[in-house]
Length: 216
Image 1: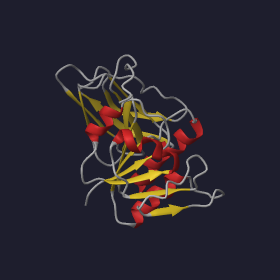
Image 2: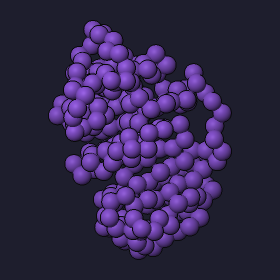
Image 3: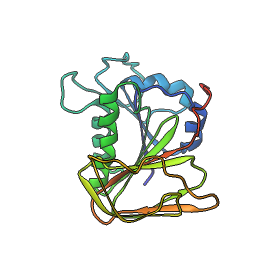
């Protein structure tokens, strides 16, 4: 089944990179102020959801779900749940990492939610790509400047990292001590990360230094 792309309202600067990562047959769900990215992403929405407290309802000839302002789920979480209800199991979230730390952390937790359901989830922002490492090993090519492993859900055990500057065998990372920050893939190698118990957030950084603005 084709992939579902969820577009949130956080700022995006490198539109060109994101356009390269989108597929022509993606099912694109725009969430409320995520509609501000509509033109620069050059994507036609498949579905629009939101309470429209941060963006005016454009009343396009596209299926639109209007949500109440007072609710438990954010517009982004609702969009993910609605896409799950429609049968999607592969998700890319963009425009969900930004200045609002509360929304950022809430959106990162969506990756845990999808993983708990056996679904595939990835977040891409201007600097990095994020996914969950749980029951399957994950590979990291040396095209990434750095990668970090963070525990955001309890304690992860049996962690193995190979092909990296700082390898690890049968390691453990708890939420209280995050020592898996800023590892590097060895030149010409592909790093591998696996965990036997628990879950880790893998963040792959694409830049050594902040990129210049590519707001096109």
